[in-house]
Length: 561
Image (cartoon, rainbow, N blue to C red; front, side, top):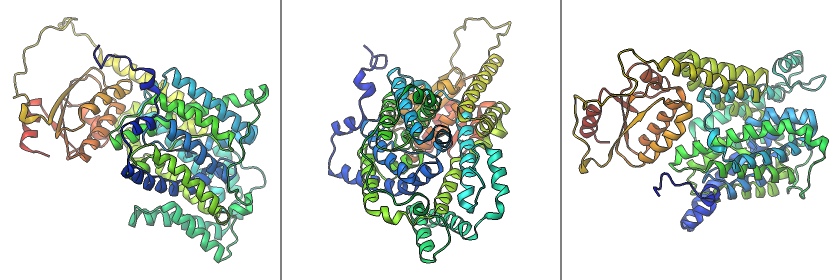
């Protein structure tokens, strides 16, 4: 049976990447590289885990427990070599609403239910279809989450005192914060702004240094030495524990399960999207490939185990996963070492962490939220195509003013309707053209096909609509073909329609080839197709647009990479 058409076995679908890496041969050099990467990620995860937990309405140690326990399970059993699991900023909105309505114990029950849903999705192989979400939807819901996170940090960043509980909805929240503007604390504002300034300065002048940890440490030291009147972790939550608690189950009675189920569905939906998106980012940075359904099963198991040990919802974290890849990780052992390092830091540094000002953690999350917004991509989508702008805008506004699940579902529905409308405009039958295509003569401008001397020049033709539903499949094929070529020629002559999701895949492919010293040549992209590619940033010198394949091959021969 042909290898491409053979159905993968159960082991090939669900075997953890840890087993794959160890079976390939794992030596001391790989362990050393993973240890360095794991320690680097742990340094990033320490302040972020506490900040995300506090913003979610739970004590800071809950975020640390999540990184320790959930992160270990994700790395040990997941389908990605580089995925780092833990608490994520994208969940702040959902977890905060869940804790407000059904309490922290109910939130943990929702985590367990979400874990079961994710396992079911992985077993049913639904991970393959999560990637069909249109690109404008992912940009819109990420930006919406970022705005809500920014709003949620204003109270601690300005040291405001509210007369009652802080509202969850955006407009009532902003109204309550504005009404309390007279209670702001200058010292708190100074600590928050100072934290943001330190993070930006470190990233500007010493990008390899752990900006978040440095900023939080300096803010805590200045606040303690100067005896600033600012609220700290210890003043609000008491002393941090040195170890995760003994395993215990949250309430699992019928009433608790019924109350937690709607939140569990939202946790599972966002967890699947966030985790697989993070795995795709890692693939693009490393050239490796994850197993989407194995990743969903691992995320499900992590969400069952995490609340049993006092944690919260677990997902793949894009920023920490990217840090893991950039730090030279070789495989999942780096993620496991990250969890061990967070545990050791908690055991040793728990008393000192109590001195961290809450305004410093708010500053960290403000930077995180700002970085979450894909500003250039959003602007390109808004100005290039009205349909994509509509999908992005509707998703963004619904996430902010309604809820995350509604925003994603409506965005996907609008994207599907938009695709149908675009395809109906393309699929026209001319009266003088037969329904069945006739034989066509050769290209009137023939070219010399690549010879043995041109083994690193690859030509690939895409046929049919290249939209969000096909981008992942075609992208995987192109990614395998483009592993080593010096020049990659992609012909779009027989592509009637290219949307932003397909264009985004080509942008990622060009980035990967450029890092490897290769070049991309695109042909048949005149008109709307080239405008779509250019709107997402694919311009010279990153890519060379040619009129014909012959021109592209000749150019590749003349200008070796």
